[in-house]
Length: 283
Image 1 (cartoon, helix red, strand yellow):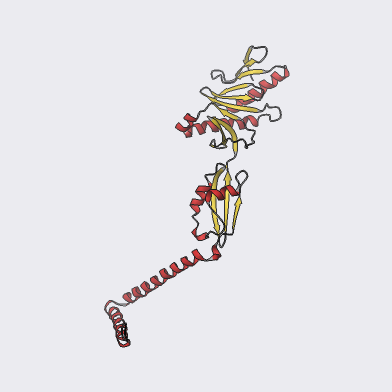
Image 2 (tube, helix red, strand yellow; image 1 turned 45 degrees about the vertical axis):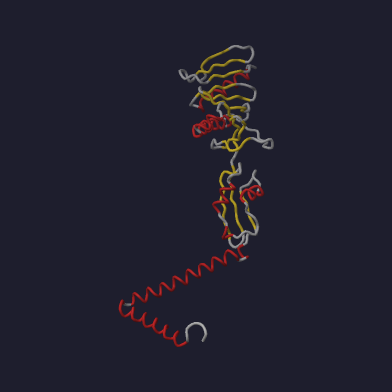
């Protein structure tokens, strides 16, 4: 034979290997045989795993055919697909789910997103969107969600009738986002409490102004209700009674003061016409 070992030599090598294994077993006991068997099994499993992975990454069985979205109202499926790069024909095993979630979450309306693979050939995308609760003046107008987070600059196509939160600036927000969001949350809580107070008779809320002296409500008819800080529910009840009395008398107010800390039960009213000021206790 021109190349390689002869048959007799191969038989001799095999016999020597067999004898070596027997010798090791005789010398060290059955533990060595067990180790040899485990090593062989491990090698087989590793090789099998490599082959299985190669098959999974190349098999047409696992090519993406359908992406199912849920929870979308303002964000569009096509926009999220474009952001993420997810397309039909990609291999499900090769998808980076965390990367898909990060890129889809870059959409301004998306609050949270969860991507799941459904083998063999589909993906589901569950989205939770921001719910706009107010507009905020931060240089430009921004949409603010229920958690007080400014999440999106207002665009011409955003047709929303929401109260305005003013009194904060962009520099202050960037310097302390947590504090600004807390003030936004306080303003939203007051707006919700106002909406729950005599919903049939109340004047529509136009603006919540956040200032050093506390919160000021600006109603659609131009009336300012200066609430100050704290005791919101009681102040809103007094505001409702004062406005009812003014309507009964055919009067309108320019400013209604409810921020008297020394005498919390007192209300001062500056009338629109004639320009005068009346004060008294509100029971």
